[in-house]
Image (cartoon, rainbow, N blue to C red; front, side):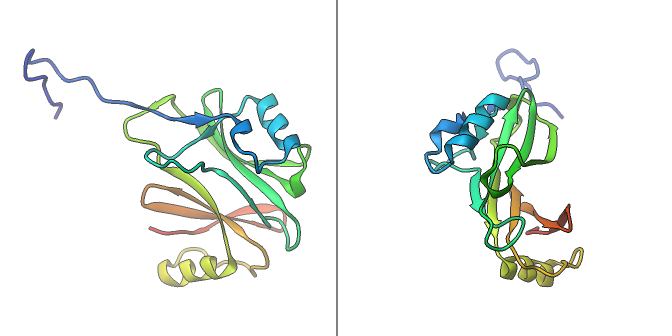
Length: 166
């Protein structure tokens, strides 16, 4: 049922929320070569509504122990995707979960990424079930949206989707 405007009796327009996005240069911790590559691709980094701290650029060991990788949630030309830069290289990049994404949303933007440990991955599997994780020897990426999340884990050349919080 649509709510009507009390003055005109006409259906009220649906409220939309614009996603606040930052340029890659707003992240001084991000290596310059990756800033340049994200800019070249036309990426902006969406921010969770209502938080003042910058989000959605992370560093971790996402491929193997001891290797520093970077990941950024990237909005570009109507699409949202997770860009993972292996070993900090602008040439060696994986794009995960790319999907069409509107300029404005019916609710505030709540999507965030975070590096997660073996303990976090195993604890979520034990608490919520889901696919059994492979042997865990490096970090995963928790991709959350609102109250739900999934854990992305790189294993034997593929991204697995493991149980996050529900």
